[in-house]
Structures are given as C-alpha cells and as structure tokens.
Image (cartoon, rainbow, N blue to C red; front, side, top):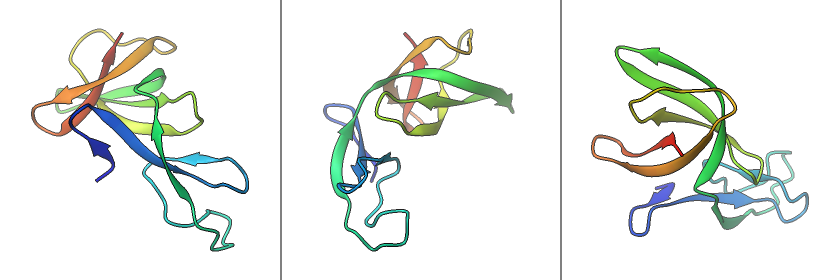
Length: 100
C-alpha cells in the first residue's frame, strides 16, 4: 500500500545514491543498478501540473516538492493548473487531492 490512512500520508521511496524520490515506492533504483531504495514519507501538498475529467470524475497530475509527479483523483470543485493542492481522504478510493 502506498498511502497510510491514519494519519493520511503518502509513502514513497528514495534512491540513496542519487537522492531521486519515487511514487509509488520502488524496491530498487530505476537505473538498473539493483541498488536498494529506502522508504520515505512524501509531502501531502503539491502543485497541479495538469488535469482532465472523464465520466464526471476529475484526474490530475500533482507535482510534489520531493520531485515525483503523481497521477491522482481530484476532489470535486474548480481546478486550476499551478494552484496548490493538498492530500485528503477519499471515501471511494482511499485518497485524492483537493485544492488548498
């Protein structure tokens, strides 16, 4: 599981050799070196990079301060690229981001 419900937080990984953070978490570095990654707690806030709507559900790409750009459901509302978003519980999917 790549999130923890209580308290709500995102769990990712970091390559100790390069410092690159990933979401969802990876067991090994992405460069094929088989270097083990370490678990890391990621920020619960980010900036909306892009978004779209399909079947009345909004989806977006949110850039986290640590580097990962994650694909996520968005809470209902007015969405704006470049705006701040925050992680929240989603009764249907476990988590989503909403405009801060």
